[in-house]
Structure formats: C-alpha cells, structure tokens
Length: 236
Image (cartoon, rainbow, N blue to C red; front, side):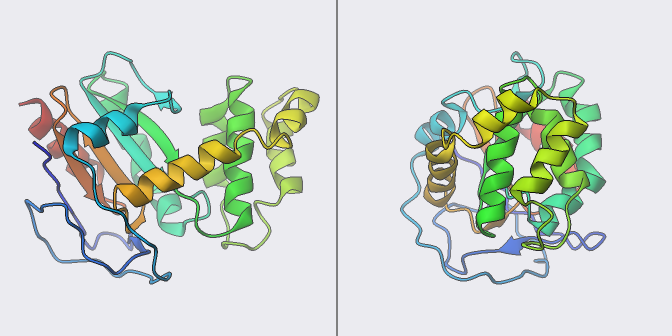
C-alpha cells in the first residue's frame, strides 16, 4: 500500500519551493502546519501511477545511488541544484541522513533531477553526470550545493562548472567531451517527466521505498529525525 507522508514543518527557515498549486490524488496520512512556499507557476500533472508501478519506475535505470545495495529502504530525492531549499537541506540535514541512515546500512540515497529554474540547472545536472563517468558523481553533487548561489546568477555557468571539475582533479578532456555531448538530455528530461507523473509540487521531494514496496513521501527540507521515523515505519 502506498503510504504518503506530506510533511511541511516550519524549521530553521527550511522551506519547500512550491511549483504546482493543484491538489494531489495521493492520500495523506499525516497533516501538519504548512511551510512558507514560493510559487513558481503551474506545471501540468498527469495521474499518479499505482504504488507498485511508481516504486518500480523510481528505482529503474540505475540512477546515481549512495549506500549499500542491500539497504532495506531507498530514499529517492528529486531536486534542482539551483533550488535554495535543496541547498539548505543539503547543508543542514543531508550529512546527518547519510551518517545515521546511509552509512549504517538502513537506507540508500538516490538522486533524480527535477530541473525547473532554467538552463543553468540543466547544465549543472549534465556536469554531475559527466563527473559520474569518472566515478565522481557524488563529489560533484556535493560541490554544486557547496558553491550554490542565487539561482540563474551565473554560478552554474558552463565555465564555472568546468572549474569545479578541475577542483576535483578530473581528466578535463574526458569531462568536457561528456559534458558537451548532449548524452544526458534524455535522462534529465525523463527524470523531470517522472517527477511530474509522481505529482511533485515542490523541491526537494523525497520518496522512501520500503522492502515490501511500501512508500512514504516527504515534502520539503525536513530534519533527519523525520527520515528516521519514516524508515522505522517502512521496516516495522
């Protein structure tokens, strides 16, 4: 059964960048006080697939994954490297989630792009995948959030992304060929389409998938304790 937990706690200025004001067909098991949201315009939303189908497509096609392949729970994050709330969650909560859940083997973390800020968001995603060809996806992922500035302010320009690659000591000929190849366009688009199909209305959004295909959705930059609670719920 699909269990959906839409949490929107007002914590430490961590919000949820709102994309679509439309209502969701997903059921809600817990209702709490919503956070402040930034409206970004209307996004077409298709009907939500069944829980089993949604879990299957979220895990398909070998997305970048951090943690043990044998972990009982998979945390699928949809985010945009230019999204300030995604950056706040990375800086304030992700390390604790990795330390307490990923490194302990309780969960693994998956990244999927939901790029909506503009071309620099797509370039950032392309650069991360290009770094992944040299085994440095997650290192580049971290550098993007550590260097995040005002959306569309130029910090994620192709020139600056090259600088981050050099900072990681990558083979720049290989990186530039991959970065400029256009090979990731279909992947980035399919990730966005999947997010729309799953009725994502803001970033970051997390889908936690348990060992029986049961699922919890966490909306917004929630604290590590919320993820611990969800993992316990999924595995109990």
